[in-house]
Image (cartoon, rainbow, N blue to C red):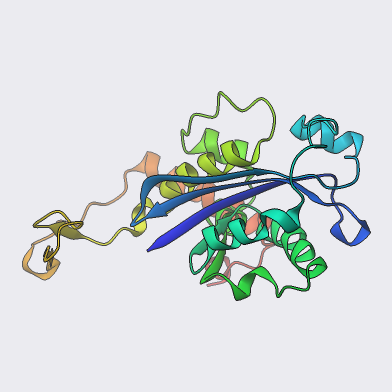
Length: 232
């Protein structure tokens, strides 16, 4: 599976009010492994960034003056993400801006070029309800080193997001044993049949049960008392 981790930086928060994309960062994974292929674009938005946005990304208006416009970089960008699964943190934000840029060129929305879109913010909210789920918070929680992130940068954030995603989905890996290098023609994979194993039942101790109860209470609180297990 080919996955592209994507992040953007923008002049502000509202594409419908004229804010534009100024930076795009993309990182490629194939079969959950980094390929080393990246795409990093700085773009001339033909307008200045808001002060609040400048404080976040630190990309000056002067720096962007000689950079290509989105129109000139659109083909390169679309070729890189084409037919891949896009993975974005807070996807509606980035998609809103990229779809606006494409619409200005008379192009269809980004979903028409890619296989699917995954929002890691939505994933994190399901996994850690009631917790902070910003990229920095997830890096800290999942022990991803983000010490080099003093300002937001699209390529760095895409690279961090790839690490975060691998940690978020680590438990979803299939139990597959490779009998040969999967990159080698004719390579074989054998699935492990767990029915042949006598798996022991390991019960939670009192400390683990108490920690579980705390998590359940947090979920119950965040859902405003709508959890089923409290009513049964």
